[in-house]
Length: 266
Image (cartoon, rainbow, N blue to C red; front, side, top):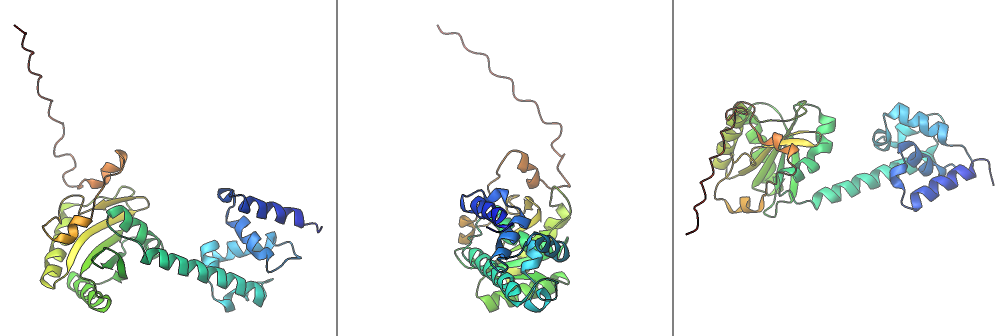
């Protein structure tokens, strides 16, 4: 047994026995590199790769020629990393293709990875079929009319007529102001004139979001909306459903009505 075999055996055992939460990115990369470099201590190389690539996600997204530029990474090692990254991307694409975006929560889950890399203020439109499955997703730019045209082109290209828009924000507790909702309402009317249903606009920061549909701003009698639910989740998360302009309009709360006195039985 080589001097590194015991460490590798522990890594494999931890992963195989289901203790994956104990495997950080370094441990996972070490285990992966073991199959390309079976007779070498791969921990220093794994540390260096993660540091230079900005993490495991960044490393697995690099092309072959950039990977082979790292010291200690040959063609076979680079190919293994490229294959792992491609398999991961295809798996994520398939998962997203099979998603049903029938709530703001699911919209958040679907779009969060894109917003993470796009930065604050990025706005996306997601084209949906009648079962609320994504057909296409596109970042929007420009004025309101520019964005409406981009949504129309995407809908014509992908074949859907139902759209959800989603935007990233730096606010830890996202809210929709009356000004935001006025913009959403104008877009809703513009798209409706083009034969497209704007189902919701969701503003997202990490695990929290604000939804125009939850506020009741986009409710009407269109059948597709019957399949779009807006669950509130936990009590603490209810903060995401308020508009910032009128969050304290009903403060202080009115006192509960006095209970009626009990009538004595005869």
